[in-house]
Image 1 (tube, protein in one colour):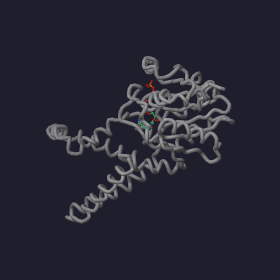
Image 2 (image 1 turned 60 degrees about the vertical axis):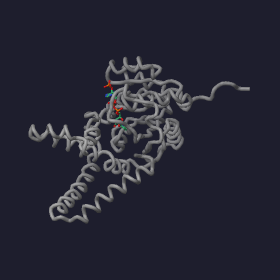
Image 3 (image 1 turned 90 degrees about the horizontal axis):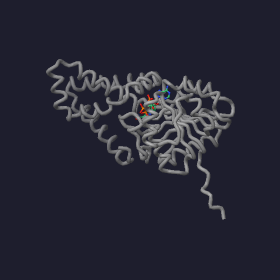
Image 4 (image 1 turned 180 degrees about the vertical axis):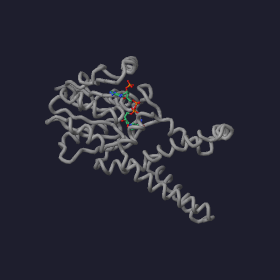
Length: 299
Ligand code: NAP
């Protein structure tokens, strides 16, 4: 009788970037042994790699991304999306034949644009985006359950090898996520409205509050519980990550912002002219959306 444990889904997984998302993946792989035989991590700074070694969440760290990907059958870019082009150029010659290159970036057309051209023949690009996160950054912020019951969206370019897509799907399911596949264009439009625009509004409203005269600014912080506080949580996110997201989803974000601005103007008009029915209707629609989220377990 063969008593050897079954081979893991991937023999060696290389994580390029190990902050909130990368370290959560490392922890999720550790918690479910069938996913990765060996986990290798790379980051921009030695300080992060030293912390990752202290945490004991990977098997090996490498300061050079090329060394990190050597011999890996799954490479996941987990750094801000603005770094992907240079990371892809650095690792391309060192990718193992048959390897899968994936990522966790919040914008997907940019990944195909920036990473796609560097992928050698025989290597598969399967971009991915877990819809899970917090406003915290760095390897201490991650946790193994981050992806449990959350969506992971795969956006393989047309013609991508089916088996490579299926393996990435199994990987995310193994990490606890529900998986959906869609076109990168569609992903970027959906994410512009559900994530990128809300962040843009949160950063802007915090800026507006901060620009108020000194005495009003003090009152804003004192009485923040009445709505403003929820914006400050979103606005606490990492500036580099969000700079890169806005710049790499420019078209969809500007389109959604234009629509939002029109709707905000319509609300302003209703307030100015005392159109109580319009205002009530909009608030009721907001409540209905919240109720649906709770029913879908995504609240
Ligand atoms: P994070 O906690 O700030 O960590 C970023 C990691 O990337 C750090 O380990 C950093 O290294 C590394 N890094 C930065 N530049 C690098 C480079 N040139 N080469 C190699 N590594 C580099 O960020 P995160 O929240 O995990 O986000 C990572 C990715 O996930 C982003 O693309 C983001 O769009 C996506 N994402 C984030 C969320 C979220 O809620 N946070 C959700 C879904 C997807 P150092 O520590 O050494 O600087």
